[in-house]
Amino acid sequence: MIGRFASRLRRNVAGVAMTEFALVFPFLLTVGLMGLEVSNRVLVQMKVTQLANQIADNASRIGDQSMLEDRKIYEADINDLFFGAHLQGGESIDLYEHGRVILSSLEVVPDTADQQYIHWQRCVGKKNHPSSYGVAGDGKSADDFPGMGPAGEEVIAFADEAVMFVEISYDYQPIIGDPFTFNSGTVNAVASYTVRADRDLTEIYQPASGAADPVAVCGAFEGINYATSS
Image (cartoon, rainbow, N blue to C red; front, side, top):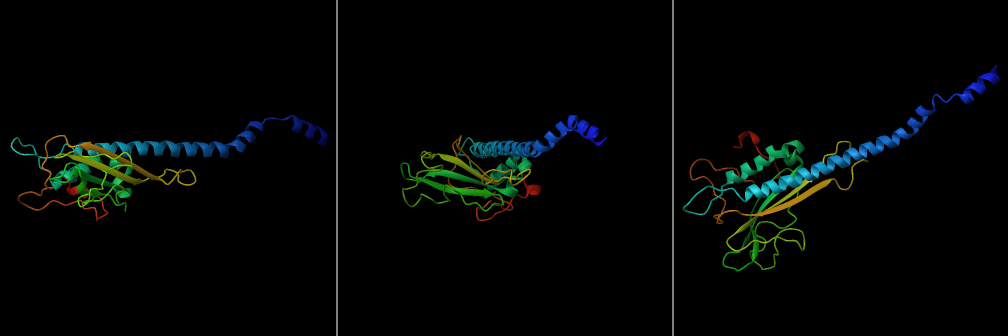
């Protein structure tokens, strides 16, 4: 009787598929989770790159409309610019909570032919990330500032014009986490646009009357007060 049972057991293959699945399931799960993280990181990189381009493009267009004088830009314009980026995609990845956006105005030092310098910068975001390409004032006192951007690929401004240069650094927020997340987890992007119209490059203005608008200074690491942004 025992012999017949053992013989039937040897011929029974009903559980083979289940056993094979149990053996390969950990591998399939690992590959699937890694694929999910890779896909999500690619999407986040694309979104951060698009936001950098959007901010730089919009920064090149802002300013009051006037037929009599060059366009002036105001602190409120900068704040609205950052708020617009939040609405257009930054909110979905919590950009200002986990990242840093640095907007720079690259110009030519007045009364020089082509000496590059960073006239001003405005920053937003809680990540403590100094600019990788210079801070406000760089290049003004010495003609050794090549422009802004990766080494050998710097962009430059022309006389009486300005280039809006945007740098974003964002700490990637994984879906699953280690050990399925690759590299440092930092997403970076840069973009630049030349100002589209004649702009008053003297300064960023405040309203002539009423309370002054908040200034997105680069010494603070905070987000935007969305409730009061116009």
